[in-house]
Length: 254
Ligand SMILES: NC(=O)c1ccc[n+]([C@@H]2O[C@H](COP(=O)([O-])OP(=O)(O)OC[C@H]3O[C@@H](n4cnc5c(N)ncnc54)[C@H](O)[C@@H]3O)[C@@H](O)[C@H]2O)c1
Image (cartoon, rainbow, N blue to C red; front, top):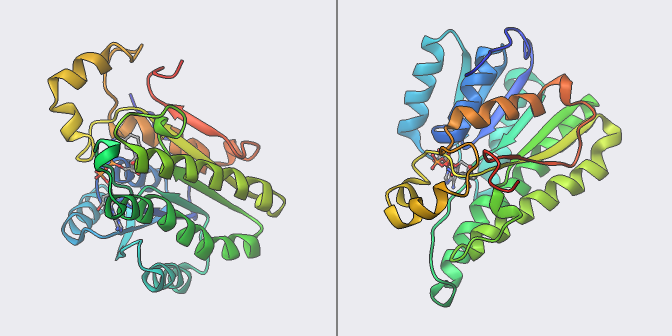
C-alpha cells in the first residue's frame, strides 16, 4: 500500500541517478507525485523516454538526462545542467547499479571493475559533484542505494558485495563530514526486489526455494516497497537521521 503525501517535496529539486527503471523509477515516481521537480539521469535512453512520458502523464514535473556514471565529464555535465535549470539540488538518490553472480575463482578484473565502476565509483563521482552545491545551500539529502549485501555477504557476488559495503561507508563518511552543513547522508538496503536486475535470481527455482524461506513477510519486494523509505530519507522527517543503513528487506536480516 502506498500513501502519497501530497506537497511533501513542493519546490524541491530531486535527482535520481539510475532512475529510468526498477527501484530508481519507483523512487522518482513517488518524489514527483509528492511535488518534487525531478531529474532522472540514466544510461538507458529508451527507458528514460518511456519513464519521462509516464511521469508527465501523471502530472509530474520531470526532466531526463543521458549519463553514463562511469564517465566523470558526463557526471559533472549532468549536475551542471541541473544547476543551470534550477540553481539548486535538494535531494540526490544514487541508484545506478549492476550485479552478476559469478563464482569467485572465475571473477576477473573486468567484472570487478565494471561492478565497482558503476555501483561505487559512480556514487562517489555524483556525491562529489553534488555536495558542493548542498554545502552552499546549507541543506541537502544524499541517499545511496546499497543492499542487504552491504551487510550479509552473498556467495558468488564478491564485487557486488564490496561495492555495496563501500557505498554504505561512503554514506557514513559524508554523514560525519557534511552533517554540520545541514546535509544528511544515508543508505538503503533492499533485500530481493522484483526488477530486471534480480530477474535471473527470480527465475532460478533452486535459489527461490531457499530464499523465500528467509523472508519473514513471505514475499519478494516490489520497487514501490523501496520508494516509501527512500522518500522518508529524502524528507524533513529524516532531518535527524544521518549515517544509517535502512534495510528494506521484509525482515530478511532480522
Ligand atoms: N533488485 C534487487 O533485488 C535489489 C536489491 C538490493 C539492491 N538493489 C540495488 O538497487 C539499484 C537498482 O537496481 P534495480 O534492481 O532497480 O535494477 P535495474 O536494472 O532495473 O535498474 C538499474 C538502473 O541503473 C541504470 N544504469 C546501469 N548502468 C548505468 C550506467 N553506467 N550509467 C547510468 N545508469 C546506469 C540502468 O539503466 C537502470 O535504469 C541497484 O543499485 C541495485 O544494486 C537491487
